[in-house]
Amino acid sequence: MAKNIYVGNLPWSCTEEELRAAFEAYGEVHSVKLVNDRETGRPRGFGFVEMEDQGALEAIKNLDGSDFGGRNIKVNESRPRPERPRW
Image 1 (cartoon, rainbow, N blue to C red):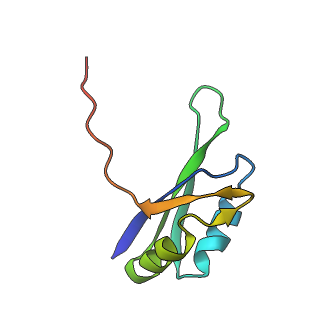
Image 2 (tube, rainbow, N blue to C red):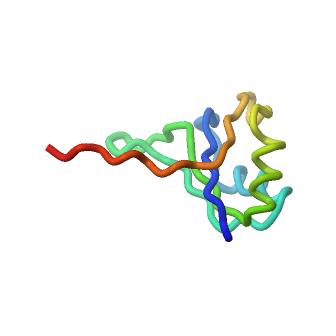
């Protein structure tokens, strides 16, 4: 089964290819998605990586707090976004 991993505090210059390469060291990466601001289209400094369970656990353990492009990235299993009330 695949796990979705949250990756935060990324440098704005980070590309999906660079992020994929960092995580591929720990297992097969299914997808990489960097999040951009809806209005400006500029990167928001976080994204998501989907990979197999065992590789995901290794990646989280080894990459959380590590230096990536001059910044200490935050890596953990993503949690579902809480429901926001609709007005």
